[in-house]
Length: 281
Image (tube, rainbow, N blue to C red):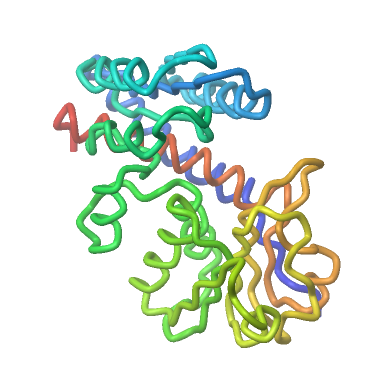
């Protein structure tokens, strides 16, 4: 039997359809949800991502502000921009496009974002609050993975999930979110010994390592669920799709899997932030 293709575009559209009514209600009260995106430097891929987010905001009749800063921007100058956006009542969500130039203290910049406007879940405080289920906005890609799981009714409780990758905005938060859903979670990384053998124990595999076609089909046990959060040049995921397809019971494609849902979750968090900041239930 062929595996279930977890269609992220369909999931993303469902999220956006639900947002339309909430945005209309906010606008009836004179409030337009607004996302501010800050990009430092001239990375072409980052420019593309920022433009995609702005385009999606426009389609949903949300406002967007794009702040482009030169490569030589200092940490202090970036912090000043973030503080201005924190204090702007018309800005409901702030996203600092990753990565920033190496001379900038990225963690300091992330943590300067107000928790109320941290719609991408990048602050240390936000990570802690997500881990303890205290209502912060989670990182958008982990949130997208959980959204796909929920949309397709995939069973997580009691299952063994192996997360390959430990980044602070993907591997670590998605591990905590799955743990909070009562999965048993193993976090793997570049130092993990006998990685294929570890992956073979998984009911659910989250590929979040940032290496194209890294996870091979012969690493999987029969019927595993593969959630590929990778996006590499050439529209290639972190899982070797063809070989993983043959062994899995459900799999996300790349493109068209987790990626579209990630953007929809960013907008969902921004709308929720606008509702909370403007006290609209």
